[in-house]
Amino acid sequence: MHAILLSFGIIFVAELGDKSQLMALAFAARYRASSILIGITIATAVVHAVSVVVGAVVGAALPTRAISLVAGLAFFAFAAWTIRGDTLAEDEAGKADRSIRSAIVAAAVAFFLAELGDKTMLATITLATKEGLVGTWAGSTVGMVAADALAILVGQQLGARLPERAIKIGAAASFVVFGLILLAQAARG
Image (tube, rainbow, N blue to C red; front, side, top):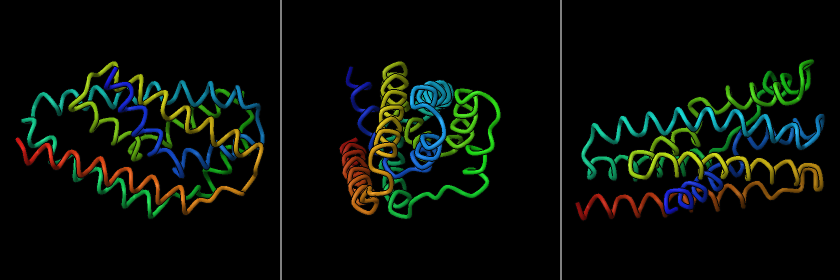
């Protein structure tokens, strides 16, 4: 249960202001929310399953202290990445607009490709080095889907009124806090 809650919280925060949320907003303008959420869930479940397997392999190969040190530093990098922000490139927005396939397939493919190498995938890998695999997978998947569902809801209700800077600062601060906790664990050995 600890892995589920921790992964949910970290990935939910990581997803705030992420490129995937921008894609969810773009899809929300064209398709039904339920179709978008199904596509996001499929893509996220697959990407995060791969992430936890990679994390488990890395976790088994490295000592715990080294993992905590690298994970702590990674979370500082995630904080910087969050402050820098993501943008939705014109070709990515165009994919959402031009899709002639079903909304579910379009959303699943777009989100799968967008998540490869993204900070939420890397955060999931990092979490899986120290936490339970199933819990990390479940928590990270639900956390991302919940954050993107929020983007869809907000996108449909409020349009462009999100205070993006405040969201970025809050998400980055959370990453710094988690990074400090992991560095403290590494220092204790």
